[in-house]
Image 1 (tube, rainbow, N blue to C red):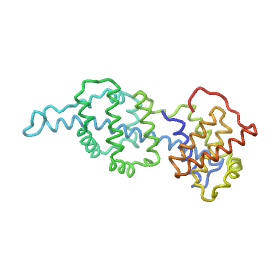
Image 2 (image 1 turned 90 degrees about the horizontal axis):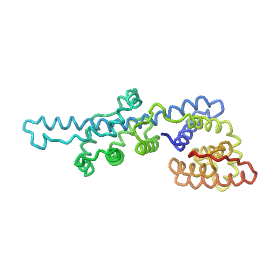
Image 3 (image 1 turned 90 degrees about the vertical axis):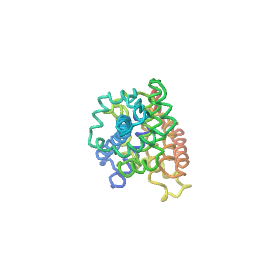
Image 4 (image 1 turned 30 degrees about the vertical axis):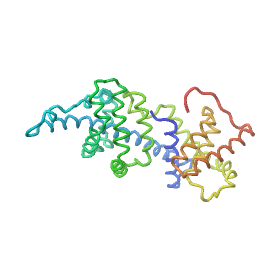
Length: 311
């Protein structure tokens, strides 16, 4: 499920943490691997917590219907509350997934769902045209069943400022991992609920994450020797640490990861810089990496292999 961009971001964050601890050295590699794995795991925690809200909102439909029907003088409308969402087939696939069910019982996830917020989100949802359209339709295709939860995610959860503030305050790492969680959720909507939640990344991508971390730590001085001469038009002392880390990562990919095309490397680090650093960082990373690449090409130091898989 996790993309190489997600991995690059987590490696960047791990390097930043090691720098703050004064341990961004080859000797800090094992500690870095532990930090990196924890950061990747937290990304999946946040995805599963978000999915748990889907599950609890759907379950609240039945409770809401029972409360309406139990009124002292219920109306006909009270007695006929539509509970279609509780039987959503996409949600059924998800809750039938053994790896998901195991995951939601983990301590980091099990107690993370707030019942008051479940109620608030549900009441917000049932007031929308999208929900009314959903319950009035007999369509149970998986596309339509996903559509209502995509609406819950994008419009009811992500666009609710108070709820996002609650996530930021209560869920460790939400601010750092929000973008990653959104990407993971998007991947889930595009695929299906048969995801193995116990296996966050493939063995290939896990090896890539560890190798990228190790290479940046081991080649630190070498990377600096290529980067610093290209900073003549920039105030070196004011260059953001994140930008310098991204440049080191980019240089390492250009030189030591032969299956990743140079264009992919530069474009990826431009986008990460735009998202996680300063407004000028995308342009800065682009300019420096492009200049370094031109020199490396002239010196015949770039050796890339073709690959069919996406980088």
